[in-house]
Length: 201
Image (cartoon, rainbow, N blue to C red; front, side, top):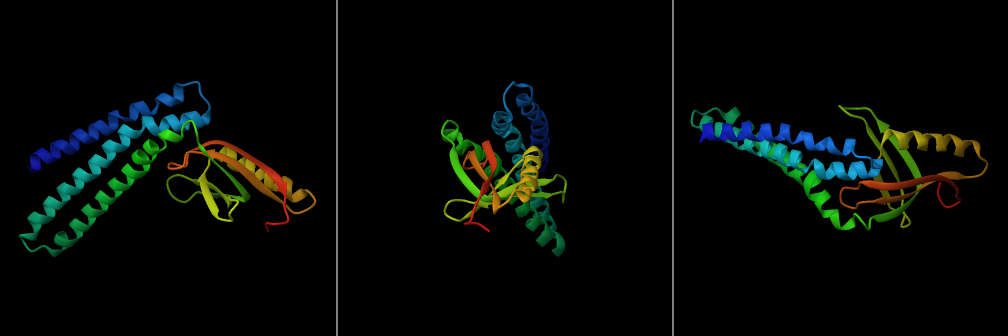
């Protein structure tokens, strides 16, 4: 059982490495950035499936080690290893949901994306961690705040509009019209602009 499990982990790891190759396909296609991002979501599905499989198999392997160690009364392995294996399973399930299930649920919306209008838009850049987090958020027509991940190009455009709005007379804010896929929240089109407003502070 242990030997077969290790073979499965190795096979899934190799599969995840091989499945990186299709992820590069959108980079060579002559399409706009939004289309590349959408295609990237779907070309990366095999990779995320194989990565999740590696996590689950590793969790099962760790759990087997914990069961064997429990016979010898090692309480650290008895409790910590099952917790770690549950964490791996949870991470695998989260990866499947966000990177596989959500893009698949977006398929009916590819030709009919959601549209939202945000006012009092703000841009955030955080460089904490391995990769920067760049987001915008704003209030919709019902007054609820919504957040989207954006690229650095849009962030710079937003910052330039901030400076321009600050120099203009009156009470100005940034507004955005966004077309997006509802489950993955992939942005297909965005129009950001300066608007004068007396309703939003």
